[in-house]
Image (cartoon, rainbow over all chains, first blue to last red; front, side, top):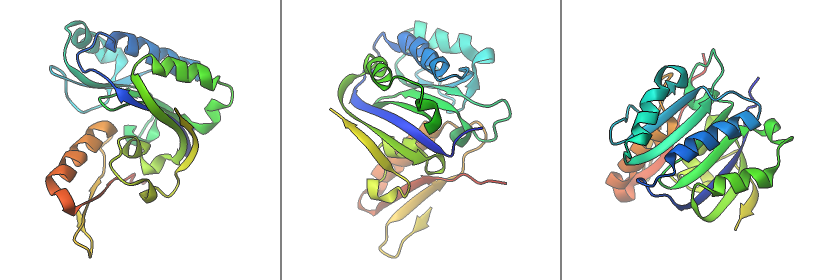
Length: 169
Length: 49
């Protein structure tokens, strides 16, 4: 069962929308999901040719995703999810979510799933996908939607369950 | 949307089953830019049945 509290790693820096690393991100993100003990089964993408804004099944739509990557599309983000089979709302029910976007690279997962993982290895892997400037490891209740915090849309004081674990320089 | 006593406008989205949260965040951030000084916080609400 999913934890109510998520642990999040967010790295900030530069990401080019038209770089050639999206395919590498896709594969590395799937591997990180597996490392945490889950199956990558859904994704979302915002690109010049593919921008539904919806979460889609990898089983059904992976070819479209790969086509967009291979075509060299300008991609704003690719998110990889592990969602339970009976998920109700993708925005809240994921076990793992990894996003490479225009402003950040983030990994969100159940806090309990980090106990048996090598944090430094995860950081090194995520840093491969951004011209790293700084980052943060923090915990937050999943109902507060940590991607809002990662996207710096609200001031930190507005998040009631935010607990900063570590600043990364 | 909700308007606070100080005039700031907060935005709330209730996602559908397959809405991508980053898409919702980006859309509300764009609205914040349009609202300028009147922009308040954004929220994505989990309605539990």
